[in-house]
Structure formats: structure tokens, C-alpha cells
Amino acid sequence: MTEAVQLISTIKKQLKRQGLTYRDVARALKLSEPSIKRLFASGRFTINRLVQVSNLLGYTLAELSKEALAAQPRLSTLTDKQEREIVSDPKLLIIAVCALNNW
Image 1: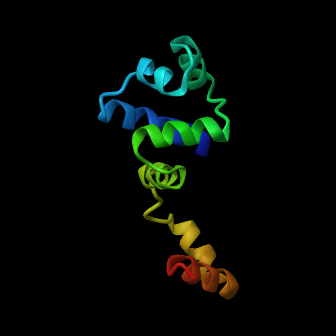
Image 2: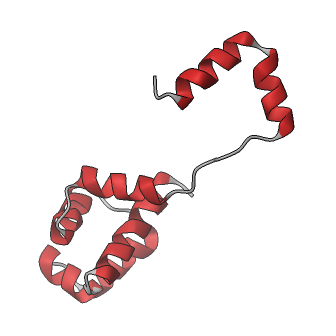
Image 3: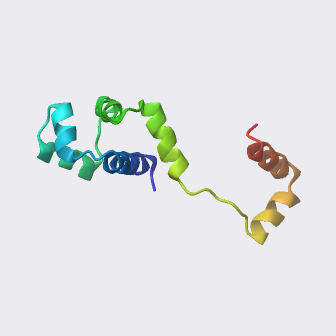
């Protein structure tokens, strides 16, 4: 799933969680409801529109992006082949350790 799709999915979940409809979003953004539906269907939001929707939800765009990122599934294990590849190359092993420790 792309970042844009994940962000829009998160916005939709937050709208549902807060009981807001596309009509509510349309009123807040001073657009028609069909325009809002097209925005969500196409995923072609401008940054300003994303900020407006984020604010409507009570989030900053950065906070909403973090919500979207947190919802993405994370890789938790490597295959045996991947592990052997990493261990066989000291540089790869160092990079893997650094990545795991957020360095």
C-alpha cells in the first residue's frame, strides 16, 4: 500500500471513528459533497486540503501521518535465506544492527 493510500485510509477511519460524513467534510471545506467523494475516490488531495481535513479531525498533518504509519504492518521475521545473506556479509550485518537499533 502506498503512503498516500495509507494516509487516505487513515483519514477515512478517523472520519468513521468520529462519526463524521463526507457531507460534514464538504461543509467544513466549503465544497460540494460530490467533490469530496471524488477527492477520496481519486486520492488527489492537495497539501492544503489534507491539512484542512486533518484539522477537521483534530490532528495536525504530521500526527495523522504518524497514525497512518503506525497502522502499517511491520516485518517481524526474516527467512532463513535472508538471515544467511546478512550474516555472510559483515557490512550488511552492521547495517542491519544499526537499522534495528534506530541508529
